[in-house]
Length: 276
Image 1 (spheres, rainbow, N blue to C red):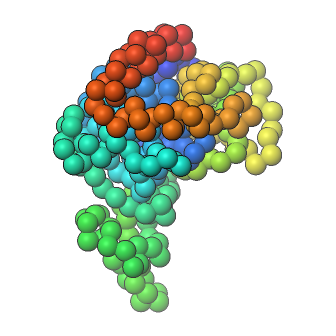
Image 2: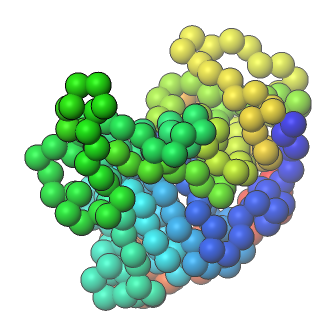
């Protein structure tokens, strides 16, 4: 059964140095506040998994938290490159970064296999790409029934999955709606999970197209209003496009990034960790 804790308590309890951490959310409901709390708590040697690493992973990489990135696309959506990601790959700053690249379909199927208790997933994918030449755990496999050549990828079972959602009730049942990506699959595949929510309510009201992660499938819940900004939370706030545009100039140089980190995460962000 899920427990309701503060954001600071949740990260301290669940995320350890060296963990494989998946922070999912596709354009919508990205767990930004949780990422900042990981930075504040000084976690190191993390392997981060995410279908679409954007600015929150850029920030974690620049802060020196990350040893390896497992992903299928990386960029600042609608703006351009992730400069801290690029600096780590090209110049090993602030530390070397190992990368493991997959397709969107490959990543999604890896989570599904992990959530299903299977050792690997099989898909018609990667055909015509050179990803199998660069990613050792993408393997050809032949269908035993049709002899068709397919592709196998190993299950992805994070040590910790962190997602953001709109609501939870006091029993720890979590409700989300809108674009939900692979949040459900990541939580079910993970050994431990933290869900940050906009609010904790007495009762969850049904929403069209919504889904509920039951309390028995969730580890910890933290109430963090605005916890997805600058991404959006449908029904609560819109995407802050200016923040994504500003990140391009902030992250382009190491000095401006370090200044942002000190002012916006370690100083201004301390109130989030203690109040949530």
